Length: 134
Image (tube, rainbow, N blue to C red; front, side, top):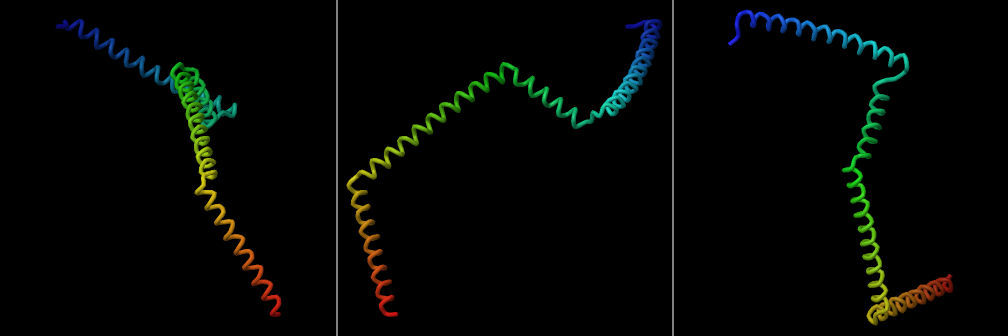
């Protein structure tokens, strides 16, 4: 337990610390107001500060080891994905090429060509006949 004398000393120290903290808060507040005045005179505003803080934070983040490793990993993954899509595209092109050269497709292609030719002949004849009637 504390003696009455120790208790009184601690209370006095507590009051002194509270007074010092109040004084420091007042000094800090005055300095913050002065800082704002100087920034206003220099044309600095909140938006510029936010931009500068963001730029600095972004730069600081990009220089971290974790960011570098993540960036490297994602870049590598992107390269692999690009290669995989390229391979899929090549495989699909090859399949279409193979399909186009298949007998079934050739037969279908010939039928379409025959139908198109027949339609052209039909419409030419019809157009010719209509011209003859006029």
